[in-house]
Each structure stands twice: as structure tokens, then as C-alpha cells.
Length: 456
Image 1 (cartoon, rainbow, N blue to C red):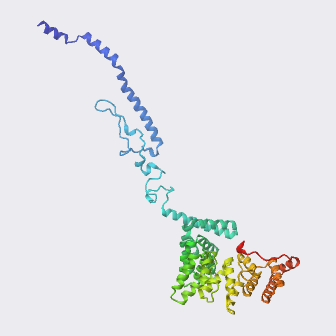
Image 2 (image 1 turned 180 degrees about the vertical axis):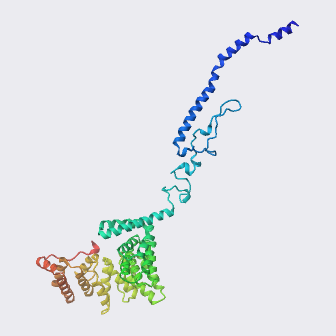
Image 3 (image 1 turned 135 degrees about the horizontal axis):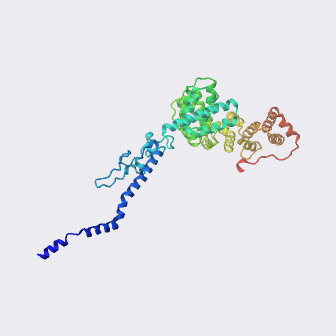
């Protein structure tokens, strides 16, 4: 009994012991009482920062959190345990760039297809095709306005610069330049045609030819045809050849044939020959003959010689005759020598047309070969070839040529050669008297036999 009572008494603390325990507890756990104060201080700091961000952001809106609401919803009220809640919605959190809206990104371009109009920020470098076309049209319009001013002021430097700028735009300027040509007949329109000819791509060539065909006959059409004949882009030769055959407009045919002749090479000549052989009407064949006779490109020289055949051949069809005329227009050394040798091989009385073709040669690159032949070269020694070369020298009047002809007339024992030399001297004296006077006043006995141009 006593033990039981004693036990019961020991389990009940006395008032003195309870007071002591409370004091010890306060001493040990007083730091925990600071937590609510620290939380309140933190909330005050966060609230101040939140107000500062609201003032800095447009319209006072906070950035949206991924998957969340941008509206601040925290109340700062204590939870069920009496602890105050932290207003997380008011804490600024950087938005994920992949989820930012257009309003959030501002001027930053959105990601996606660069050609899509609804993913491009205004003014961004990835403009749409429509925007590019609009800018190109505006650029051409501005350049056209500048060109008009430069033409009025006769500012040749600005004209050249504008033309260079238009050509640099390439096919992007074709549509607008074509509209300028079609809608006007002034000098600006003609310069626009020149710009298209410089661009010269198949699209540019087609625009020029189509516009030329639609223009009514008259001075403007003739001037436009001259610009069109300046197309030199080799990529356009199939289109030009098609235009010669397909168009019924003579101005289009002439312009296309002239442009084609300036860019012709072996591939062009071969295609013309193939179409000539396949021609179904005499008119179609005659058009192709005219194209060959208009060739003036030295790149076609070898193909033309091959077309004309052997120098000893005594027969010529219309296409081969056109090849001879083209070689005279080209005037390179190989072509001149071929023509002279072909003339020497001609039967008596059948070389007059070729003789006249040779005497019409006036290209600068032909002078050396003609002078060499006129002096009596080993390759051209017969009467016909040499006299033709002497007669052609009237197209190259100079003191040196005049003295060479005097030497030929004084030293040759061939009557035909002497006669040709005297006639050419007379032509130079008549047309260029100053040259004759200077050449005669200088006593020069130097042998003027030219060097073979093929051995230079």
C-alpha cells in the first residue's frame, strides 16, 4: 500500500517543479519565437519588390508563369496551422521563351517557318515573299524616279549608277521594268528596256520581246528594238531562236536575230543547222539563213568554217553562203585566211560575190591578216586573193597602210595587183587626204612586209 501511494505521489509534479520547467523551456526555445517576425519581414520585402516591378512593367502586368495565371491571387492569410502563406504569384519568375506570347516577347521574332506571314515579327529580317516583292517593286520605282531626274539633268554619272543598280536587282526587277516599258514611250522607258537587256535572263528577254511585239509600229518601237537587240546573256539563246521562228513581227525577228548573232557559239550554230535541215517551208529556212548571216561572235568561227566546208569546194548553198558572210563580219585571222583561200579556189567568173564580201571586211582584228595577204604572203599568193586583200585595206586608212600600198604598186610585176594598189591609194587620198600628205612627206624605204599574224 505504501509503495503504491508513493508512486502516485511521485507522478504528480509539484508547483515548484512546474515553474522551474517553464523557465528552462523559455531559455532553450526562445529563438523559435523569431520565426514569425522573420516571415513578416520577408513578406514586407517581397511586397515592396512586387510594387516596384508593377511600376516598371507595361500596364503593371506581371509576366505569366508557364501554365499559370498572371493575376496575383495570394492573400498572405495564415494557413490552417496559423502560419502565414507566401504570395508566390507575386514573385517575379522569368517566363519560358518557348511559351512567351507575342505581347510578352515584344519585338523579338517568333520561332517557326521563316516564310510564314503569321510567324514573322514586323520589320524582322525573315520577310515574306510578298514583302520582298513589294520592296523590290518599291526599289524599282525609286530608281525609275531617280533615272527620270538624272535624264532631265543630263547627269550621266547618276544614269550609269541607276542602270547598274537596276541590273543588280536581276530578275526581281523584271516585272516592274516591263510595266514601265509597256506604259510609257519616253526616254525613261527606253532606259528601262536597256536595263532589261543587261539583265538578259530568259525571263527578262521574254518580257522585252513580248512588250516589243505589242508596241505599235513607229519610232518608239524602232528604238525599243535596238535596246532589245543588246541582250547578251547566253542562257537566253534558245528563247531568242524560238522568237525568230515563232514571231510574225519583223522587229522582234530582227532584234532576236541580232542578239543571237552576238552570243552565238558552236552550240548555237549546230542547233540552227539542225533546224534548217528540218525546215518544212522555204520561209522558215530563209529565216534561219538570216540568223546565220547575222552572226558576229568569234566563238562561232570554227563552227562556221566547218559549215562552209572545204576551201576547195565549188558549190555553196544559201546556208553556207551565209556562213561566209558571217566570217567576214567576225574578221578573226582564221576566218580571213579561209575566205581568201576559198576565193583563190573559185572557178573563173564565180568568185565575184565572195570578192565583194572580203572587200567589205572592216573589223580591227582583220587588219593584220589583210595586210599580210596584200603584201603577197605564201598562203595567199594568187591574183584574186591578193587583190581582194589590197582592196579591203581602204577600210583601214593609215600612214603605214598608205606606204605599204606604195611599195606594192612600185615593186609588183602583176598588173592586177598594181591596179588594185593604185585604186586603193586613190581611195585613201580622196577620203583621208591628210593621211596621204603625211605619208608622202616622209621618206621611208623600210620594208613594210607584215609579219604573219598566225605566227605572232
